[in-house]
Length: 283
Length: 185
Image 1 (tube, chains in turn brown, green):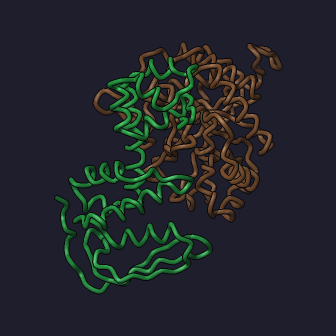
Image 2 (cartoon, rainbow over the protein chains, first blue to last red):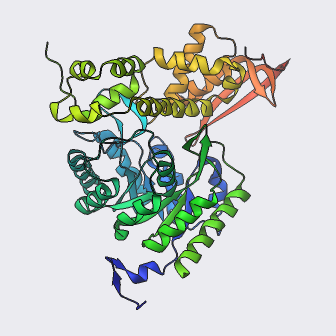
Image 3 (tube, rainbow over the protein chains, first blue to last red):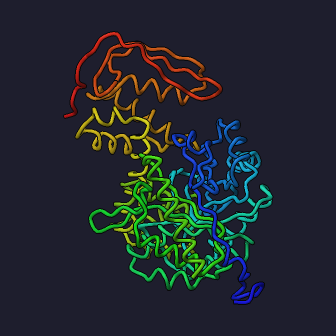
């Protein structure tokens, strides 16, 4: 491959760089993370965890790592205005963190009547597309930082005017945003709704994929779940390798929640992900 | 009386929140769509919903709420034993959904209040005090409690909650061992 070439809108040099590997910041891991272990290249912070306090900690982390600030409650898929108070808080956290990226979900979490508190799918229609594009632009205007949008997992499949990958391509293109591709969510959806994850992936414009999320899935009673509490399975690492070979991914975040594993286990997991990325890029 | 027009996302929000509404929707979609005042452009979207998938999505929301509440109230959950799940579902059906970025904490607090009102065996005043303290902006709070859980034993003692540099801490002065905690039903 000739250096400097552009393939399918992707800078070929970008496909040679090894992505940064990091994890989602969780308070019980603070001491270890602040000790700057060599396995962590970057961090993702959940904005809502810093809405009430933690500015000192944010400043310390900002001086140690490239940070992404991840939102849960902006509900970009809800028609109407974004909740201004939440957006202001989100912007404040992103500013203090000097976020390299800000991120949210292709989803809705609340409406005028109810705050469901978690992510729900939006119909893949042109109407939803416009709502998401407008809201994504508004978030970028307010925060003045690059936005990446994450695919979610859902037990509910909604009617589609557009295929999901086409919807994401158009969303990213029209909003000027990137994709935070959650490899685990893609895998889980492909199992629960029986489609080919690689076919889905290859329908995406590679240039939109900027960052990955990964964590082990859970499996109970014939259904796959995203509980963020399992070690990463081999098939997820294989899928992540496919993505890294396909797109100029800049970073990969492991997102463990709930009862966190010992630090030694996280170190091994970070190392495994880095090895997979290196192999994928070198091949 | 005019009904506020809802679009598909708003209607789905209501369906995901309300079990009874979902049941009626499963029986007669057209009636519920009319009742909610869904804009005509979005009728097809709602008519094509798979009710089993809708139920699964709604269950997942409750499961995630429950997981967050357990994170705040691990000992309470353990002491409630086999009653825990049933009590939580009753609480969810009886209470408004918590709002905002502190919703999980407010949910834990609401669940404690529900257990108090029910005089539920397994309720722990010490964890209730802790989530109450977290949810309020107090700097310091002290309570005499009889259900401090320390190394799987229950103690009577004095529980102290305080904030240092904005970070909440809790501490306890043990006075009397009460042995193993009361088991759930």
